[in-house]
Length: 202
Image (cartoon, rainbow, N blue to C red; front, side, top):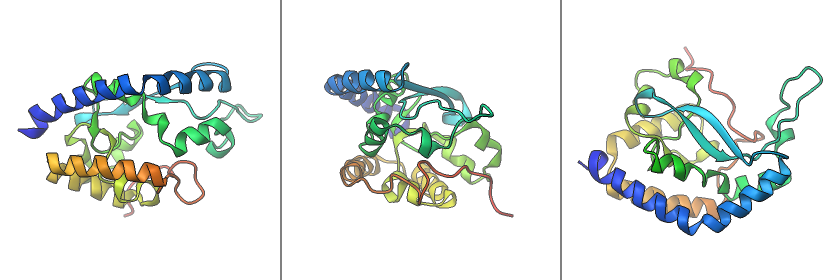
């Protein structure tokens, strides 16, 4: 009942209110990134949503498109801009995903949407993370974020799917605010982002 009817209504109302309240921040960050990136301030990428359906996630673009002499993109840590680093540390890069929530592609709370190429690499149990809409924040994010291994993340994602409730969602939102303020688990060791998931060990 909650997941099918009440949660979508809460998502829409909360996302709309958040976009209105954060609109000055949205505009200022967007303008600064547009100048810093010498182009669009937005990063748009294909991600799998509920039941693996592909949608286009929207985030603020925190890395430039610099390439090496062979035409390959430089490592993340070399492409991350000064202002982009600040935006990531404060999680402001997630704000545009409120648009995905309004469109019904995402929820405020749920497993984070990962890359489409990971879909065939999940175990049957891990695939259950796609039984619900992906979220801007989730159970794994408040329990370690990028400090967790992939297996630990997926275990938390499936646990969320099994225990989804208004109380759990409220707890995750409150804990997310605390994590953002304290900046816990933003980076995984020395990586700017998590190392790519390569499948489960045999």
